[in-house]
Image (cartoon, rainbow, N blue to C red; front, side, top):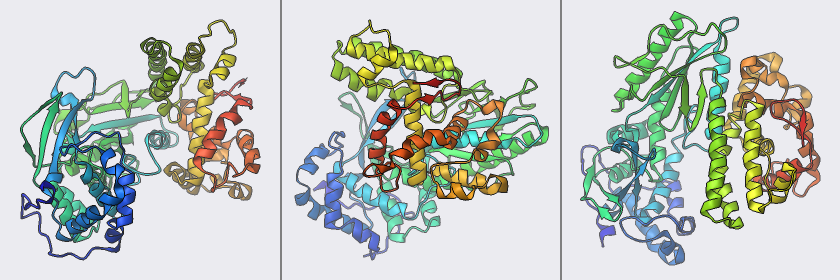
Length: 568
C-alpha cells in the first residue's frame, strides 16, 4: 500500500536519523490506542478529503477498529523517524485573499492532506508544543490570546510610548513578510527546533515530514501535475503553526532600543516607537534595520511596497517623519489609515471610518440575506448570527465605535434585522421588537463580549490580565488595596490612569478597563453568585457564564459605553 511506502528523504545532509530511537513518555502516551481513538473522534466530519479521497466521517465511523493499526504505525514512524510518502502528498486549493483577485499574488494556497495524516500531525503538534512556547508578543497560533489581546496590547503600547511632558507622536511600522509560509527554508525550521530543545528523534521526524513533499494545484475539477515543495510549511497542516512559532520567536527576541516594541500576529508584525524627535526617528530606523537583518538571516525578505508607516499624533502640532523609513534602500509608504487584522485606524488612533463603513455593510448584508433566503425566519436567524453580525463583533471589544452616532447605526442594524425576522414594521418601540426577536442592541452586545473577556482574564488566565499586573507592579501608587486583592472582580481605576487622556477616552482599552473598574456594573453579576454553579467562580464553566449574560443585561439598566445617560 502507498501509505506504507517509507521512502528515503530528499536531503540526507539535513535528515540524519538514529536507528530505533527510544520514544519519550509523552510520545508513548500520544500514540497509545485509547488516545488515538480520541483523536479519531475529534476529526471534523465536514472537512474536505485529501489526495486519498477518504472523508473524515469514514474514519469517525469505526475508530475502535482503525485505532489499533494506526497507533502501531505512528509508533513505527517515530521510532524509525521516516514519514510515509503518501502523507507527503497534498492538493493545494487557491483561496483568494481579496475579491476579485487580479493576480496569483492575491491567492493563498491551502493544502488538503490525507485524513489519516491529520492524526499524525495532531500527535506531532502536541509533542512540539511541549518545547515551543510562543513569545509574549506573539498573538497568533497561541492559547488564551487572540485578536482582541493584540489590539489592546497595541493600544497599551501606544499609550505608554510617549515620554512624560513631551508631544505625542508615535510611529507604527507594519511589516509584510513576502510569502512567509511558502519560502521558509527547511534548514531554518530544523535549527529553530534544536534551539528549543526538541528531542533528536522528533527533529528527524519533522525533517522527514518536510523533505520530498509533492503538491498538486486544483482549480475546479482540474488537477495540475505534481511539483516538489522544497521550502516552506504546508498551510492547512496542524503542525505548521507550531513550526512557524519556533522561527518567529527568534525575530521577536532580538534586542531593541528602550521604547521600541515589536509585536506580531502570526506573520503580521508591527514595530512601535515614539518619534517626537529626530534622535528617536533614527533609533526607529536602527531597530527596523535590526529586524530586517534578522528576517533576512532566516531566508525571508520584507516587501517594502506592502509594508506601511502610520504616524499617530494627538495634537495640532503633529508632524510627519522628517525622513522616510526604508527597507533595503526602498522607502516605506506613509499612510493616513492603517489596516491590521481586519480593523482600520487613522492617524489619531480612531476607528471612526471603519465603523461607519461597517455599519452600512452590515445593514446592507441583512437586507441581502433576507432577499436571498426569501424571508425564511430560521434560516435568516442562522445566517445573521454566523455571517452578518460576526463581521464586526470581533472588533467591538478591542476597538469599539468612537461616537454615539456610530453606536446608533449599529443598533439600527440589529433593529432592522429584528423587524425582518418578525415581519413587523409597525411596532414603534425598537427595543421591544429586538426583545421579541431575541436580538440585543449594540451596547448590550458590547457588554456581553466585554464581560466574557473579563471572565476569561480572571479565571482562565487570558494573557491580557498579565499586562495589567505588570502595569500595577511598575508604580507603587497603582498597586491594589487589601480589599481589591480579595476581590478578583474589581480593578482599581488607578490601574488605567496612564491612558486617562483625551486621546484615549473612547478607545477600546479605556472603555474596557473603565467597565471593569466600575463596581456597580460588576455587582450586577456578583449578586448571581448564589446560582448553582456560581456564575463568578473559577469552577463555573464559560458556557454557563455566557448563557446567563443576556438575562442579566436584559434586566439591568446599563450606561452607554461612552458614558452619559443610562440606556435600557
